[in-house]
Length: 279
Image 1 (cartoon, rainbow, N blue to C red):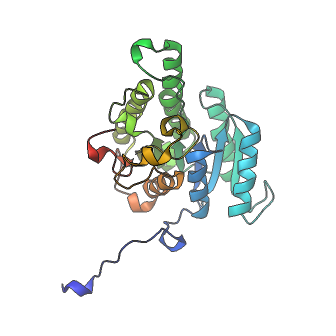
Image 2: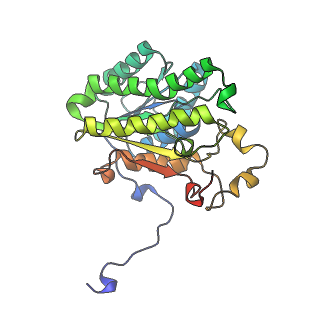
C-alpha cells in the first residue's frame, strides 16, 4: 500500500461527529450530580443515551438534572417522552437504595445497559497507623462493596440476561502509593482488582473496565491541589491537571462498541503522571 492511500490525520478536539453513538441505551451513573459523574452524564446524553443519575442530596441532584435536561433534551419537561434524564435520590452505600435506583431505571427506560460506579469518598488522610478504622471501613464500604452491590443489582435486573458494560472509577492512587490518601488508594486498588475479577466472570456478555484518573479539577480533589493549581500541574507531562470531561470521554469510549474487545482493563487518565515514575 502506498503511504498516501491511508493518510493519518492529527486528532483534534472530540466533536459530535467523533462520538460513538449510544442512542437507545440506558446508563446509570452514581454520584452524578457534580464533578466527574456529572461530566459522564452529560457526555452520555450528548451521545444519545438515556441516563439515570443518582446522588444523596436531593437539591443539588434535581438542579443538576434540570440543567442537563435543558442542555441535552431540548428543555423537555421532566418525565416527558423526550426527557432522557431521571434523577433518583439515594445513598450508594444502602442496599435498598441501590435496588430502588436500578428498578427505577427499568421502569422508566426499560433497560439498563451501562453502569458507572463513580461514587467515592475519602474521609481519612495521612498515615495508616493513625487512621480511624471506622473511617477506613466507610471508605471500603462505599468505594468497593457498594460498587459490587450495584453490579449485582444490575446483573440480576438486566445485564445477566441482556449483557452490558460497566466502568468503575478508580484512581492512580490505586496503582501507586501516595502516602497522603493511603486508605483511599487501598480502596481503589481493591476496586481495580474487583474489576479484573468480574471481567472474566461476566464475559463475554458483560464487559467490566475501570479508569484511573489523576488529579481532576473538582471540589473532591481541591485538598490535593491546594491554592496553587499551577504548581500541582507541573508534575504532569501534559502540563495541566485533568478535567471531568477528560475522564468522561474515556468512559464513553469504554462503554461504546468501539471498545468491544476491551474488558478487565484499567485505563489511566492521568496526563502522563505515572509515566514519570512518581505520584
